Amino acid sequence: MAVPASVPILVPTLIPIKPRAIMLDIQMQSLLQGMQQAGVPDMADLPPQAARQVYSRIMAAAAEPVRAVAIAERIIAGPGGDLALRVYAPRQPDPRRGIVLYLHGGGFVVGTARDYDSVASALCEQSGCVVVQADYRLAPEHPFPAAVEDAWAAACWVAAQAHALGAQPRIAVVGDSAGGNLAAVLALLARDCAGPAIVQQTLIYPVVAARPETTGSYRRYGSGYTLTTRLTHYFHDLYRGGRPIDGDPRLAPLAAPDVSGLPPALVMVAGYDVLRDEGIQYAHRLAQAGTPVTLVEYSGMVHGFIAMAGALEAARQALAQVADAVGRALVG
Image (cartoon, rainbow, N blue to C red; front, top):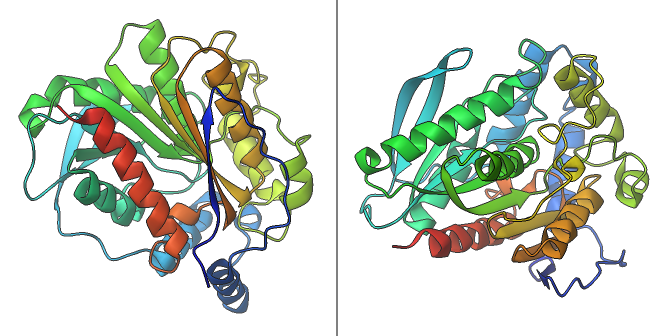
């Protein structure tokens, strides 16, 4: 079967994406059926520690083998104590290139940098850039804004240490899901705080709204796929820690009163994903504010697909697209 439809939309032309009768990709169907047959537990039924173990197993099951790049661990001083980083260096680094900061997904509750070795190493090898991941603190032990604070600390460290890492202090922030939220937030913070030089942002099915349950994608895809409405509530509640913070742009970039003056963006959404519509809304807001945006929909995919490159051709295509975007943005 052909590679699943990927629909590029260059905004600010603001061509609307409308629901279309595109089937779930056959490779994705097989993967979801395998998960169902394996009896993978619903993370929303589990305490966070058990949910993290399930998430790590899911990530490992569909990941590509880790690429042949150098991987090193660094410990830096973070806002809440030691902050662990993973640094991926290409076999032939180009010191004229900038550096990628990757923020992993997992609803701010599950996921580790090591879970994303496959994704980060692929981006490193294909883009030719040094990639850094941050093992930011997770909720509920460390609710909002701990993840934001750690992501900011990692960005500042990357900018300060870029030359020592064999790169230039120009940063592309890349993240998926919760990490997409953090990448968007870092772009806002860098603008407002005269912080690190973030020259590109890639937001992969990002969480950008505080209460998005009214969108059409939540109504259509809230059950039966990888990220359910119930699981988003589980993640949201633990991350918020019971506080009324919906209007804080560090929680929900869509709530930011001003999204002008931000770096060019690649926004990638999945067709069968509760977060699809809010990702599209944020791309359009950026474009309306004058930011160059490329919006791409992988129509036959579900949430989390980019980490499933061991099983999905569309994931390999998406990783290559991200690597191309950051590689172009960071070239000397």
